[in-house]
Length: 221
Image (cartoon, rainbow, N blue to C red; front, side, top):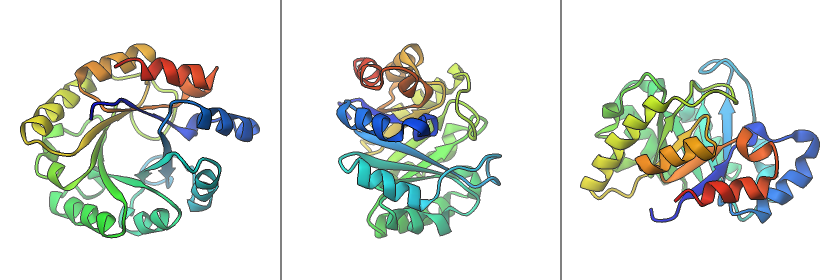
């Protein structure tokens, strides 16, 4: 992917300013909207359901709805969120710890008309995804422990990006690399230099001038 994609995470949106921040988002250079779904089991937090996604789809119709399922049963929830308007569904390798089951779900997501992504937590090796990459459209590297916003960026995760970038390029795969956790201008630049295609940013985008902050990230490549 030649163009750097910015995917603001609504986990950090100020819901007392929902309308104005959505309008700013739609006027920015952001192309995707990152939507974190947490079930309180796979990660120790609860977030958004499908009706909330429908609201964002209606409010920001031109943005790609990038849904990250941090749930114990992504096989159940993937169709639910696709029906609600998800364009991309990303689930975690650690839910199955089995590449065949991951491939099976990726194919199901494709059959339902959405793009499929696979994500790994900081302690999971990038090499676990070797045989899954040809089956997915996106791989999401977590540069923090999933579950909460505002955590510090783990620079060691960039080694995973480099490993995956090498394989994707060598095998000429159509899979993009996304990174999420602690992304701001400095860490975003490190990620882009390592080979990231999509930057997920929450606190950095929404705490301040949304349009200007998205533009700063967009200019990192």
